[in-house]
Image (cartoon, rainbow, N blue to C red; front, side):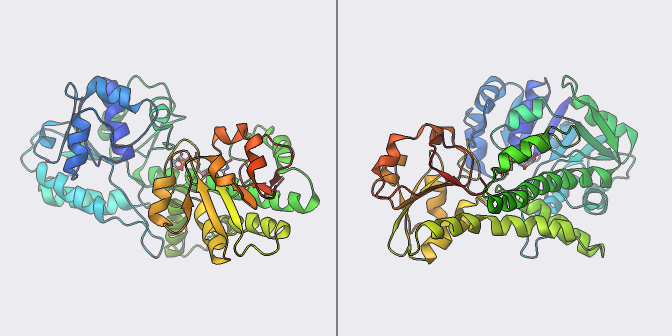
Length: 423
Ligand code: UDX
């Protein structure tokens, strides 16, 4: 099949590369000329495990990146993978969806054969039907019999996106008509996973409900963890017993300093905004965000119990990325923690194996160290905020500290005298 993909971010680039690996002929359209040039040279603008190998195997053969839409008309299926960042009120910004739909419509004006447009971007329920369909049909001057529409959400985790694409738990296909859904289903031939065929709006809601439930499991674990902390018991022992219930599963029950990343906060906030527009009061969803916003302060409270006045004290912060194996600091829980420490006059010495430079763009005023040892030297306290496996090997490095106050916001250290945020 000939597939065109609009948007070369981590969803678009991973999808393009994986569809090429499934044997399809793929063109990836992005407005960024530098990104297009890098991809065509086999250089991935993002780090994703396994992506470089796939990219170099297919680019120039059955995968081409371009800034233009002129080749779109020769494809059978177009996937929209542009960003839907949050607006100040929490709703999803759909402007890039609309402009992509317009450009796709214009490209299809002269096409005679049937074409399918599939939305893979995370969009509020009703967007495919009420924005994408009318926009594409209007600008292509075509009737709905000539263009089928699908909503095919992604469930990719940063750092594991190629694995999650090739071995998904399920493939969700919401469609306006059977032929459109069948077309997208055939694009995934070669991937062994349950296929969920449904309507456009239900597919959009499956994506939001999935992310919102994962975020809910984390905030639930953190709230239980905060109670366990008061009881002096280890929340990990509690959630191990909880997670053995087959209806609950052990996954996403790791209490800590909260969830970060570009998706959970954005998607839960968009769902809250959507529910309010539907005149449904999202009590539970609001509490998921509230717990996550308060959780970083729990680790600062524990620090203040150990060091009454942190004004002028050196605090080592190990871990800046929102999770290990990435340099991404979007919504990282390290940001509110560091801001609170700086606000109280602490001297923060930060280290992250990958995310120093990303965080320096947000918080230039703190010290960035080249190693954990450098951050720990003469430190009055240490906070661990990202689950980097290398932190689990730290031991004698803690002897470099001026005072041995070690608090972990992620369960990763092996030293016995560290105190946990919820354990
Ligand atoms: C998430 C969803 O998992 C993915 O399906 C969706 O498509 C995009 O959003 P991602 O944001 O890349 O993926 O990372 P994920 O591994 O889900 O972790 C998100 C955050 O939750 C991280 O900050 C992580 O540290 C935190 N987390 C995760 C917990 O605090 N506890 C857990 O048990 C699991």
